[in-house]
Amino acid sequence: MLRALFIWLSESRALRAVAERSPIGQRTSSRFVAGTTVEDVMAATRRMNDLGLTVSIDNLGENVANPEEARQSAARYHQLLEEITARSLKANVSLKLTHMGLDIDEKLARENVCALVAHAARCHNFVRVDMEGSPYTQRTLDFVRELHRVPGHEDAVGAVIQSYMRRSQRDVEKLLAERIRIRLCKGAYKEPPEIAFQKKPEVNANYIKLMKVLLKSGVYHGIATHDEKIIEATKAFARAEKIPPEAFEFQMLYGIRRDLQQKLVREGWRTRVYIPFGTEWYPYLMRRLGERPANVFFIAKNLFRR
Image (tube, rainbow, N blue to C red; front, side):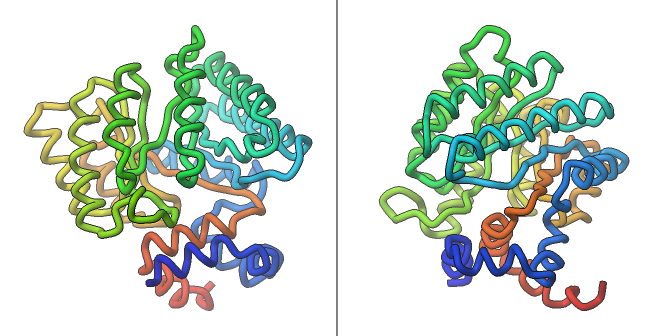
């Protein structure tokens, strides 16, 4: 019920408008969002690097309303790639296609993202194309395949697969046939039963099944989860199959389970932190609270201690 509530809240434009402008809303988000500026996220990235963690940076935003907003979003990502290179940070970037203009003009979105992937390739970096709700799944995967086929882009772009989607096994097989890097996560959008598994044990079982396929593929993937049982299952499978720690990475969210992030680093596992920043933090925060209701109690407990 809590997950459904927070997904509903994430889609409320009225509540979003109030929250993103209120001081208490901005204060609440600061645990999970690294400020609103490029300088803010660069500083957070440096702190993570100093702790032995690599980073994936996300400039928060989705479903832009006009071409100019889409171009501005793309320009911000070019700035991020330049700053990462200039500061010698261990970081890449993650973006949503609707932030690049997919809802407005598919040609514009393609131009924006293709230019970003080309930029990443030139500076030996990487663009992760995030997954959105099911209406965008096929278009997103088609985009990634198209970008990956461009000569020189093979190591510069990757996809995201959500284990709660019933189609995910087929999608994984198709992506691996082209040796495309995958971030595996559980999924954060509300989907109907015919499209997505509804029960947590089903989602977890599918996650573990897909994780095993990814680790044995010989392609470098990201296992994105805070679920300790799944993390332990991943480590056990890697050891049993003699898959070295440098052959894949764990991925976790900024501000969530910092203790576990550090434990993985100490044990020698590659670990990347997904750091979002920007003014449009409300939908992101609501989905994170829906994924892990314990975060609600953490915020309530610590909000007035700062």
